[in-house]
Image 1 (cartoon, rainbow, N blue to C red):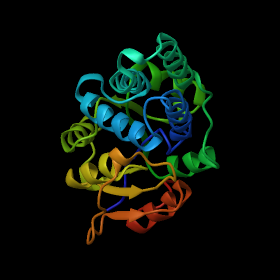
Image 2: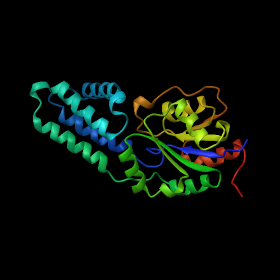
Image 3: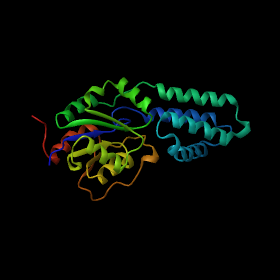
Image 4: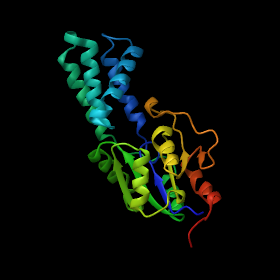
Length: 236
């Protein structure tokens, strides 16, 4: 059965993202060095992020608030007020970083557009994601843009219904096993996992062991060929 709808993640699937969070984390660890060892600072920050997801959601703004909260937790009354200002500055840099496309993305999107409608499916802060998409210059290549608070089975089920495509004729591709692959598979779609070296531990999960609708790719450029094996090929 041919694929009609091709859903793609944005951060670290189309453009670099986690490298900028890594830079902010390095700055955070350096600022907290008088109060906590690097591993303790990162462990506390990760726990704070996980705790705050239900309040702040995903994205740079929630991450910045979690850095500030963690700094106050570790530094207490000894924390200089200047550290808060420095963390806010790190958060602003995170929000303002240039958008750098991954290698070959434009050519890959051209090839995918020959095989189905493209829909961007990303989670995070609405304003920031819209700004990154505008800066990327890729917006006109997509039939739809879906910026969601989280990616769940219901998210994908509603999305397939909105675009009038049966789940078995849709594919989702991205760098998160937890958010891009598993819920899309559970909704009845095909799913491709394109891992990136700087993966966030929160997005990690065990891959399906015997799912014929799943494929791990070494690069997004391999997705058109896999779609061809599912059925169809370029539209004429």
